[in-house]
Image (tube, rainbow, N blue to C red; front, side, top):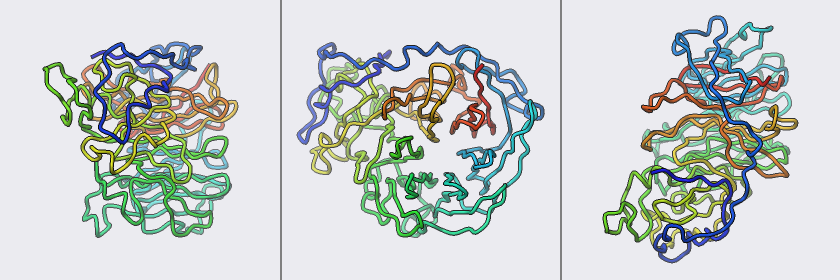
Length: 454
């Protein structure tokens, strides 16, 4: 069914969750409040843009013309081919690093002159599913699936490897027996040098992760010099997106749960019977939202007991959707009576994306930010996901940074998915380069795109 998406959130919707039984869904049209205006009002509509391969980058899927939707006048170039490219980081001397968990290595791309593709080589190999990359001065941090390493970096050479966080859970952990759905880790470093690492859940609703040591489905932190990590934020099902904003706060973009049961005692599908506790595709399509949240010590994002809810009319099948300052509703499967966690006590989620967006890489483009009307903001690689009909389309999203807060989601680059749901590309991460161009990794096509404004 078609749904309206509202840019801002409404304070009345906090009633969506309490420590009591979930209320029946609000009747359609019963809510009334003014939504916050979207910060995207001045941003022009996207237009069809042909993707231009550089010399040597035209193998499949670029052996035929590909088009994406991009801001008017922007160009999109296949800058390099890097199979299974994942997360990105710029070195202090302007080289782009690309992690490749499947290959166990980190690739270095050195920009060429003009339309020449970058030179490419392996910077470090033999790692255990390297994923997250972060720099502070001349120190490179690499998140393997079981530890976080630090290297001294100088002019394309790594030295002095040391393990700063050890014994992170992954598929090889004896207590997990190889069952780990989200083993890849991301890493960020705070302005004071504190190290943050994302630790995903072992499964869709594996509540035992909250009692593990170290805690899974969490963001851990360790001192700048490394050491035993402690829990910084919990209830974070898979916070693959992890970055520090211009003011020094830590943000995460979260892959939330699948197959959420309808939590209300109401008729959602129109058959005249209560659908509470049922897995309904129409409900799963838009629930729960994927959070983009500012973290602080002790924050809980609710998983698997509370789900952030985009419905402005909670539980109504035709409710308008909003992703700004959204409250939580109890998970009927894991927290039916509210005894596991009081969802109403959780701070609302600052921003979010549609259910099953599968956000991966998160970065901040700081002053002056992107060209034109965009300016500074957060960039999110939306991978798209399976648990939706039709599938959520991959894209690069932008969230404007104004006065210490992020505005609503704006689509910056899309068009990787056909009408039948098939895809030729899946963005993972976007970062702004020293030349102010955007560089986007795509693990499906095995590419790095360079996106430039006029």
